[in-house]
Length: 182
Image (cartoon, rainbow, N blue to C red; front, top):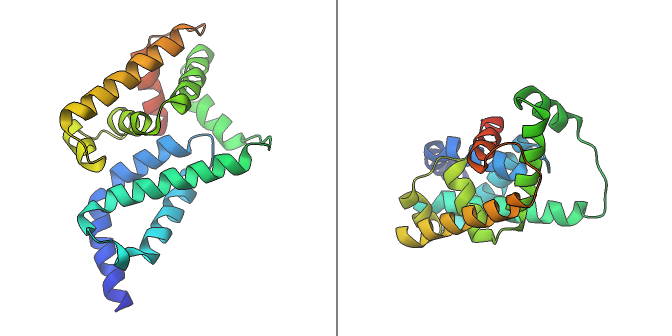
């Protein structure tokens, strides 16, 4: 019975692997290793796969688990100062200039301040490459509500980033951030 459940999970997961990993990269960046986050989420989902009512909503379930794992990790690390050499190497190898790296730093800080639904919609659209329709299905909202959510997130980010000394545009900074995660 357990083998059948694992096989069913693998069949469903195979379809969503790439966009799920991209989403995990965007959420894990600077907090923990992407592979660790992916594995923890898969393990937690696999353990409770039989209890998931709508197996077609597996991606939504996994994203919820990722959001909870990241939230818990941030809560635990709130009072700990850590230095991540791997993150530094990743930034240095993929960011074209120190100015862009600073802009990405400001962008990440601003994204963290967004309401969770806006943050999720923006990352799914800009980084993971989901369509408006797909994000609406994941968040159980209409396409127009999803467009509004993404638009408002962009407006908030532009406003917050306009207060920062920056060298590149919002779009260029978002593109540079997405390219780091690919």
